[in-house]
Image (cartoon, rainbow, N blue to C red):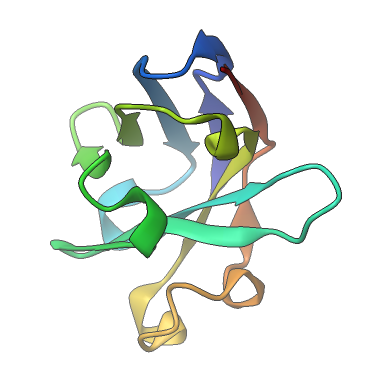
Length: 124
């Protein structure tokens, strides 16, 4: 499956932004999808994942970010509200068959399929 991430940009603190991850080649609904981010000089970290109908978030984005599927468009989006400067990072989406993840949706090394990153910059 090929993934294409989009939607990044430059916003001010408090603004909202929606990132989208579009899939081609396979039916996206059969895959778990994770969003990860990497800030400058830091390692890639988990942000959110959707596994079947279950949604998971890292603590720092709970209540501000929402991950959801649009099966008709074969996409998974990350709606981000109340953005903070510390949310600044390159955001990447990844996909994997749920049985392979086996609950480790927060570990980037468990995902085989990756889209290119999209940069989100939040100014204060």
